[in-house]
Image 1 (cartoon, rainbow, N blue to C red):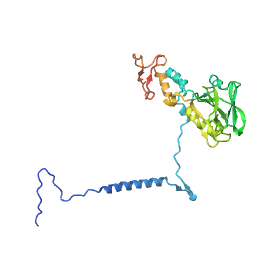
Image 2: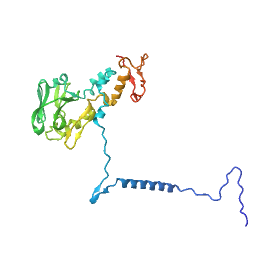
Image 3: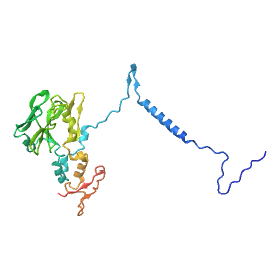
Image 4: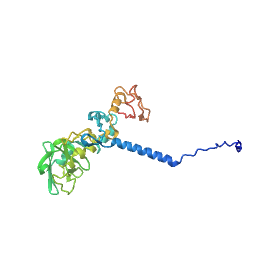
Length: 306
């Protein structure tokens, strides 16, 4: 049998096999990816599809239940703005007199009495509202539930400047925000809805659900607010870590920080772990005690001399 002749391979070039394997077409790889993705989506749909229960009833898969951390555990991480005063006296004083510090509070004689004493009446639309200071407490008389006019005692205030609104307690744990507001700059009363003349029974009237403080005002005027609405009884058990917009509303819960400062910080009794600060150096990284590294995480101490 005659032998097959091969062409000589030039020096420096690799030899070429007699039979080459063809490259896989690009479209075949794309098709495989599409098929795998479609199969995965189909299997996922089967897992979430409604299932037929006994009797032919169709039941959807139960959604995962929401986990809400216990209120006591959440509030325990908050120290309150008053604890900031010892180390941050100038900042605390500025906050206490600010719109945040006065965003919501109980009635204070020196702040609220000028709005109610002497008594006065003002007209808005087809209605009138009367305000007075009776027995050491402010009262507002306006058409309310069932269009009845009866004096309501005011015990809480929201806002400070340029206007203040007042809250009246209602059944079911509700607080209603009166539409009668006071301007402390001009010492005048006005209706926040102008000439709309909202009537009792309307959703937007001060006695309606549109003016329920628990669901409309409270979350923005308080720190770490919990509405705690009970659907079955249509009632509220509202609570908050601190009334008004406190320091921790922006800085986050600081109880661990306060504990650390009281135990190891520069102002603890008997001297601090930081030692004397060099001239001009007002910020030092705290040295953490053994075994308590978690307390000092992401904490920088500003040492302010008393």
